[in-house]
Image 1 (cartoon, rainbow, N blue to C red):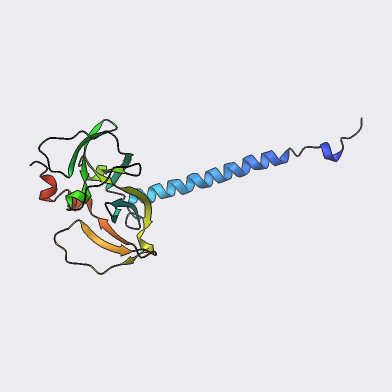
Image 2: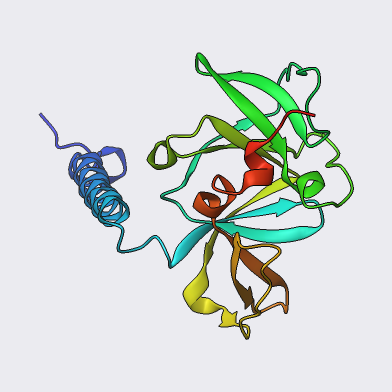
Length: 191
């Protein structure tokens, strides 16, 4: 029998190396994911990475411990005899959640609901079945890469805790949801 010519030989080691390399990359990814989840649970990273959202024309940062699920805007059932900023109730995974137009709550123009609009539920840590209507979700923002602005003594908006300027000179404000749910005006939705 003659030996096969080199041009017809197949490299059986190459697919095995590909599989081994994929498994290694998968293990590394899983390890990084576990590490990130543990960091998030421990609270070490909550003030560095925050969820960036647009509410009206303003950029806000939400603490990952207090921000919950993000969903597309679906059916919102209006509730009669409520404030104009109280949009109504929506169903998120079997739970009735009140939806607040936070821009309108602050006295700004109502938020236009379009394809980019989202509902950001309050996190379980707050034990408050409510959510904010946001114009857009802008993803995670690293506060460590931003410049803090001088603190103001604005008592009218106690939920606006700190302000930052990013590398594109855009102003971001931390939204303290725990202060929002303690505000008497926010709690009084009836007319």
